[in-house]
Length: 408
Image (tube, rainbow, N blue to C red; front, top):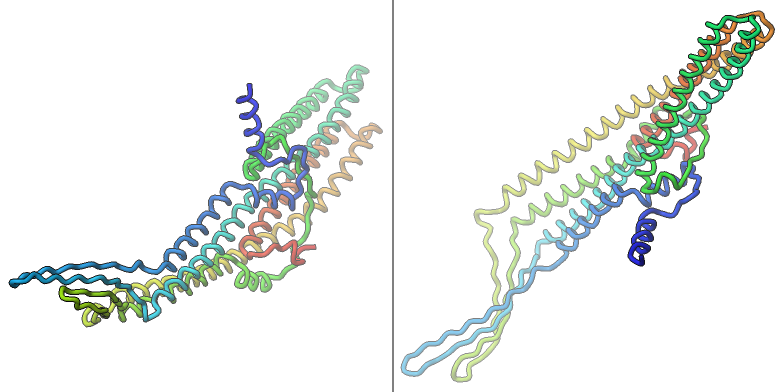
């Protein structure tokens, strides 16, 4: 029994305590950055970079040497030598390699930031997908209520002989279609909520989300966005650091032409009481191998990293322009749909009043309600697509547009 209680406690503590919490986007983002397992795994890469720097900073171990010579020419004579040798870098290539490792570490950290931004986009998509499904669920529920109300009135008229039973059957069929769509929406809503819970690393039953599923226009110009890309995008800054690391490695390769020096110091004693200190210097002569291959390789790698940087910059500008055009198109569609929805709602009200007064038939009301439903779901889908594109633009530009006045 005690073991069962312990296991239950461990299972409950495996997830953050957020039971009954209502999450807005800000709280969800904070929770995501703290709990997401993929982010925790990626952060381990920084530990590897720290380990590489630590290894480069470690000095080479000294070498201890002992030798004994025993010679006999009538009388045996012995000679013992005790010495320690140490490799000494007088050219500074070790410092250059350490500098390159630090630059690589900075590059890894910036690239990690960019990868986390990509994961964050996935979380935001999921969050707004839930808001979209909730909006559609509300729209379908309202429409289903209208169908039920009209169906009840038509049923009363059918009993009184004032309406055809076929009309009632059409309304009933349409209402069932709406209810099936509502059930499908709720299934999708539960599935998307589970997906968000997986990204946040929490239990899907422990939270609900809140937020305004509304349109906020982007006000930044394309020139401003392009400038933000060049200045703020983490993967471009990461590649800048990679180029600097390649330059440091090339400088270190050139210094390999001047080899390290081995210094030796020790003590020697000989039979007969002769003893004293010894000192030696070992300097390799760079007559043939001056690290020509390493220098050529370092230059090629530097040129390659510079080209990668140019490709990244051009692709980033292309992505920004593409997303900006898409968002501009979505803004136009949103404005157009918003106007159509207002008109459609007015037409539905007019059709309802006309039906109540007997001026139009129920099929006219059915068409009006169906049109309003289609426009509402299309509008919600475009709003979701707009926000999804905006989140992608935030990743591409490396900037939170909502926090810098890029929206109103």
